[in-house]
Image (cartoon, rainbow, N blue to C red):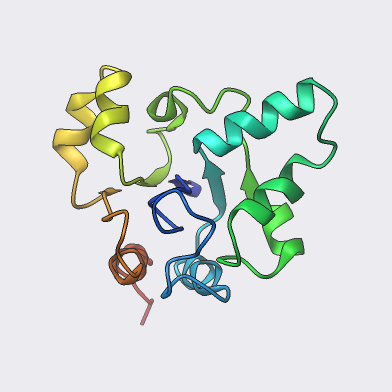
Length: 158
């Protein structure tokens, strides 16, 4: 079973709608936490992913994963690891429709409740908000995301 993290960018790993990474996630902080938690795959469901895919369709972008790496504003540093583990789904919208519930899934998005509602998946939100679903404050320093990711790490075997 794969451990998959679905994530948003604006308000989740960067401050609001800026390009400024949340301080605790900056300088590769997010990447380090994900590696430590044993995340196998990272799926970007952000609106930014939609824009990147549109740019690809229009012939304006040839490296969608590279563009996404830049949009993550330094929360990831190892571009090779990023290319190996991060994907943009073919249809990142509606966000929650991408979640594969047969896997060990996790979802962090400052607007998770809105997107669960948009996909008519309030059941998912109500069942998992606070555990499998993290709803960070858009203006937080990112510490709640680091703590949450640390808590999803598999228990060490004795």
